[in-house]
Length: 296
Image 1 (cartoon, rainbow, N blue to C red):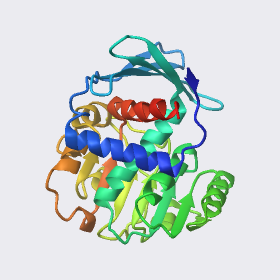
Image 2: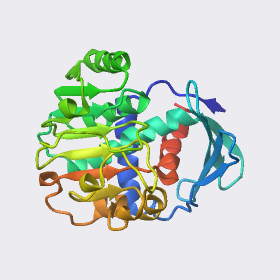
Image 3: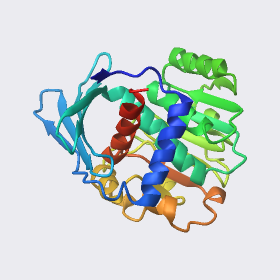
Image 4: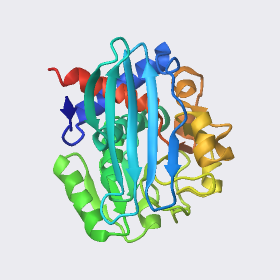
């Protein structure tokens, strides 16, 4: 079965977010076997990536398989074969972009719901690609966002994103000329770019600001400055993965399991940053939802 779902829907975002919460509370995610991401780089411009995960609770084995190129056009091509752990049979081959997009929106919803101030209404988005839309979906699924400001290196793409947000009928949206203008005073900020150097976001962010940092990362660089990453509680999917892929500054971060099950009072009153590196356990949960609902 080959499945390429349409654009991410809010109902799916909320459903997968709830599956993630259930998995964190019940230990399903912690019991998964999730080897570190494998990257093969032959030095010819294309990298080859594999992200496997096995869950006996869900009865699934997946492996997101991707190539990362230098363009032009989409630089990532990916598929996710899904197998039964009991029979070994191939259950589906999912579109990797669709899995990633839904997963990112859902985990954004989980983290934002835990960290952002309850009355957050002002969202800033830096970037205007597919992931920028997923950030709007994830944040607006858990907060009553009424105003969105977007900045992108491509103003036409930024305006297209704003038009899509306005068409959703829940918020105003407009393009800003700079990252500082877009983020000034924002309750929630989402960065979804390929920048490997810190973005020039505003310095007058409110004390309760929550930032979802979703874009490019290496141990040496991130979309946010080290000062901003260290400005308050730092959230990651997995500390092991975050340290390996985005640097030692993540060593003392709060992982998703602790975020959901631990005591962290006052998160919605302090600056918080979700420094995402991705994790195959969340891809598996997303695949479980998509495969289950493909039969209905």
